Length: 176
Ligand SMILES: Cc1cc2nc3c(=O)[nH]c(=O)nc-3n(C[C@H](O)[C@H](O)[C@H](O)COP(=O)(O)O)c2cc1C
Image (cartoon, rainbow, N blue to C red):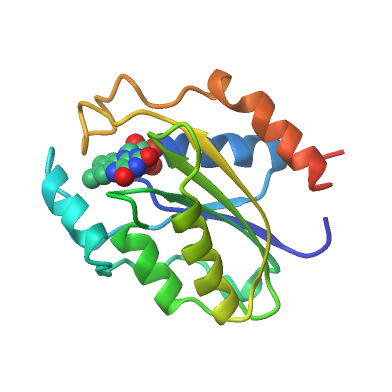
């Protein structure tokens, strides 16, 4: 693919991280995780859900790379309480996507990706000059050990989504 590509994602409970790592393994594209300044306490689901519900933006750490240096972004998001997450809201608010091609990958507990969240993230990327080329969603679980990725036993395993991801990358002519 032409230009420089970056996979950038947020993940509290590890599902989106698992997809992002597999995407990195298949493409070799640079990989960066969006981190919140204040770690979310173990099990603080209601707070997380409320933050998303009220469209809050959390304080996020600056990425160690400049988004401006990339032409293609693969943005990893998830659904909380029917909305995008506070870290993603902050990233979209801060980001400048001018002339960038953007692919969005989502993980969610529902069987189908949230069209509402996909549309709202797409709109915010496009308001900042980006073009969303394609999107994909992967069904994960609502983790019982939410907030503790290390101990989570139900994080999506690559076997569950590898083929679908490869097919999507081929469709998009990112992989041969
Ligand atoms: C606070 C909270 C609220 C959630 N609300 C939804 C929801 O409304 N719809 C849905 O499909 N999944 C929902 N989920 C499930 C997550 O979208 C799913 O587990 C996702 O893979 C989490 O991504 P992560 O592991 O990368 O943080 C919710 C999870 C959390 C923690």
